[in-house]
Image (cartoon, rainbow, N blue to C red; front, top):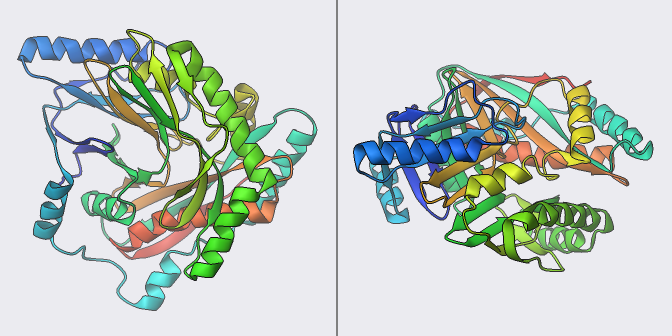
Length: 389
């Protein structure tokens, strides 16, 4: 069973942390030097306690802001079988919309004309040579009648996409970031490095023939393949200084999630000695998958065109142990919960040739994944668009 104060990450390994043994100082930003501070915190607590420790948490989209990383007082590694048994004890999720029509309406995000306007502004910036790519997100606030059960929401996200990187991270203000990300930024085990960048997306369909058409169209899309190639090239360039060898497939593969198709390229490498997973993840963050290129120009454009600070959205979530092993995924397909309110974000990569209507549809599909998880937990009384510039 999970509590709202627990910190949880499910990837190749599944961690469940309770209590606070050590907390990263709030004045410390998520920028350079973070990996060394976290490693020092881990090794100090291990020396004092005589037991292995891991750090879990989240890093904001803007690396100049404070990270939310803790060393839990108690942490257990759980198996998939443990999860199934716990779900059986917990029973079905209650409080969700019960009527089919209510459920259908709850997972369809409202139309957002302001987002299409922002995409048009981004395309003009691309034509002017200011950026070659920028990732624009749309934002929606929700209000439920009662406090949202974040433990139940985590179970809903994890059950919706069992192969994703599911996370439940409390922040310092009493909120909780909950979600299930499809995108691995960096995983380190010994000297082995793995990364799975995603760019290029298509919505899936209930009809098998239409679904297959969407999959094939994505794989042959000139625009999506170009967007993906730019991401992979830039990410590989950022990874190479940390590796002795790096293997980057020349062609992407189709990555399947329950509601979306993605173009993905599985990257593997051998790290230079002494390199930690946070060294790697911190150096590549924010990646072009969530920011754009050039990074600083894209970041500046995001500040202008997006109405709200992203906070932890499009940041990193994951864990690291005292040997430097760990996993960090992009904080996507999630919801930031504060009591009975929730904030959702979803973004799309804008490049030359992007279409505002298509990008709006892509973000709607991504929002739908999070809305579907929330609808399984609680009815929503009010939905408010956070207007774009």
